[in-house]
Length: 180
Image (cartoon, rainbow, N blue to C red; front, side):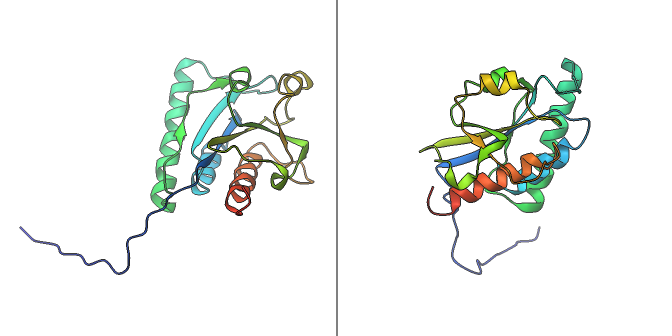
């Protein structure tokens, strides 16, 4: 039996983390959700909630939903092994857009929103940004989410697999910029 002795090369570093985390609710798409989960894991997202909204084309039954969520969890674990974030994001079961509306800290990605620097982060807990499907949220969904702040992701129309990554990056930068 061999013995291994290791000496630390420097002082121990502890990442205290932020009192505010960034979560993302992402509409189901025909493909690319594993890539979204990989990217937002690397960016430090604390939670991912796949959801169904009115314009979502993809509909998962219970069996497909369970398999899909497990694939997303595997993608998060693989991304965490590579990028070593402070924590692994929680991948929740598929929800409906209506289920997101009661969550504290909910922000809706919308071309008519404001830049992340304008938004006031919650004092603690998490910001959850909901990013709609290709074609965005319907007028009815936006009306139901009228009390939620709106986050603009820039001047261009982003794909449904690009927008969640941009949203997590923007809100994470807002938290870490020292003013939030």
